[in-house]
Length: 189
Image (cartoon, rainbow, N blue to C red; front, side, top):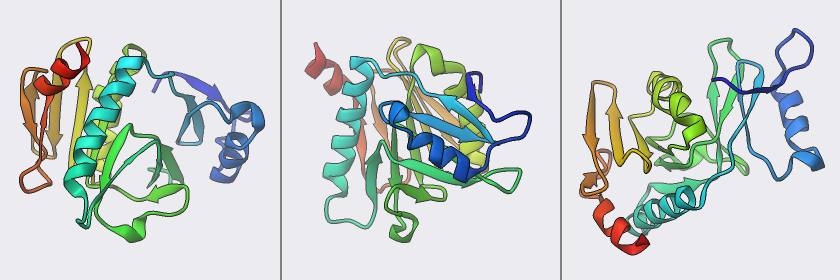
């Protein structure tokens, strides 16, 4: 991760300090991630980023209606970090199938699937750091969607598959759920 926004002295912050920082009025309109005691500022999404998140989450939500799993956008996920402290990441979209993981303001533990829509400023972090982080922390399936490069990549612990926006991509953790990216392209033209 590259963009360290804030750190108190030479000591890593605690989750409580991060939570207080996150609640400051001047920080309410911004999004942050908290990893290994450091705060990282997240880039503001573009309109295309928002369209992709809306389309994909809507398709998944419609499919999951009446089922055990649920789709979330904009909700923090708490992971146990390497230092034994809590890390807070903010995936664009995730599917959670264990309801007791969901607290009022966050998901506590690894959801089954995480999807990140790539922004130019976050490409390296999303493709390298987050892929390793999420899969190492028990996420079963991780997607990166890169509109600018016409590329979708689906990772599992033992594979990766590449697609384009002309493809229909199967969500592996669900029985028969697919996202039709060609339909998305037709709708956004």
